[in-house]
Image 1 (cartoon, helix red, strand yellow):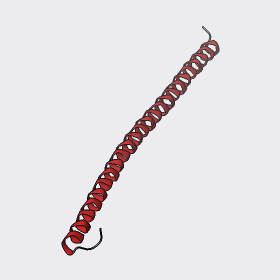
Image 2: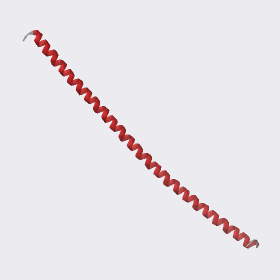
Image 3: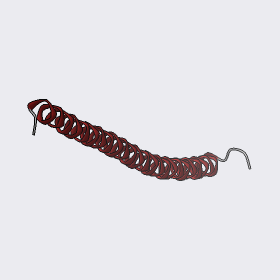
Length: 95
């Protein structure tokens, strides 16, 4: 084989291998990009789920506090009415 032909084939083979490596590098880069994007979506979905669960718990706690406040207010009102009635009976005031 002539030296020029061998050199040309060697260069052609080298360039072909370089093209394959470049294609593999681009493919690996795309895989990394795709995996990173998928991980970002998974993290966002998880954060959204945590946020929704936190909101639901906060609503439950708020409703419990509201209901407890209503119960305390009703108890205080009943107690005040009983005190008023007792005071009126003792001191013969009003109905």
